[in-house]
Length: 84
Image 1 (cartoon, helix red, strand yellow):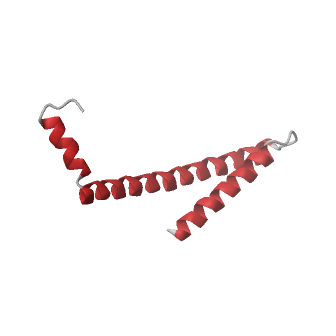
Image 2 (tube, one colour; image 1 turned 120 degrees about the vertical axis):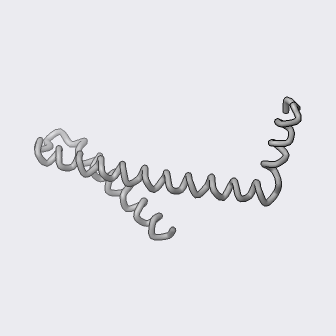
């Protein structure tokens, strides 16, 4: 997990640098296109890291609900017709 955090941080730093470079007025079209493509790949990588973290969070949240019985109470009240 630490390595992924470092990779995410590195990807975000690279993306920030690309955005800064593309902000200059005198950007060569071909070089700008190459940087833009690289930025798109970095965005995809960041999204993948964030999706994975979100999935892990949801998994842990469900495990916690099972451990504490919170999910069961909600299901019981729904099946009993209780509106809350």
